[in-house]
Length: 237
Image 1: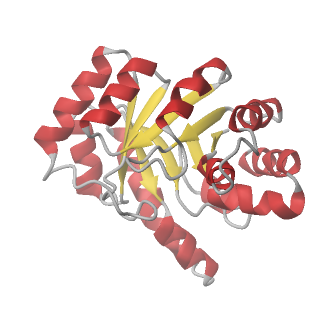
Image 2: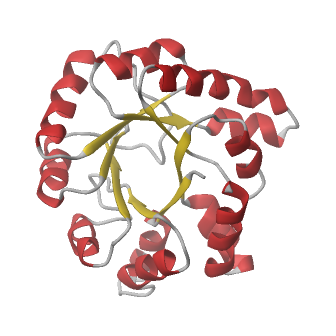
């Protein structure tokens, strides 16, 4: 069974919209774990428009499952991650002004840079994952630079599946097979939801972890957070 890591960026966005501490990010993170999720994900950005760097530090007191920090490895991000020492760091090539992640790494073009960054995180004993599209060359590149895992960027699957194209999962299945053969762990995330997660997980061999935020929090507005976490866990079995 793949682990469920819940991205709590949207909780921070809601809190920040009023300037106070409601909803309380630490309480929500605690409750999500109590509801059964096996991890918490955050994705701090330079403008701190949702998760703040102070949040990243404060969460260390309440996360007792896996702690995954995502982001573009600029110097400030690297300093944050090495100071905290989370379970996993996921490298994402976000532009500063990006609304959300919209592409995986070109692991061949950025080989030297990524290899250096990954080496630094490994020096601190932090598991490293690289956000990639389901392209064989990019997965092979991830293995070359020393990544422990890849995170498959699943927007294309989600869009295709919503249109009734079940074959949209095929490139991801093939990518997972290649990754496993290369000794890489397999994570996935972006636009996964209650509508598509069961089909996706059933077609991705050796899937270790999914990171879900926007859809899960949105679904919780109607169905309740505890209920939705349980629904995801059931679909991932």
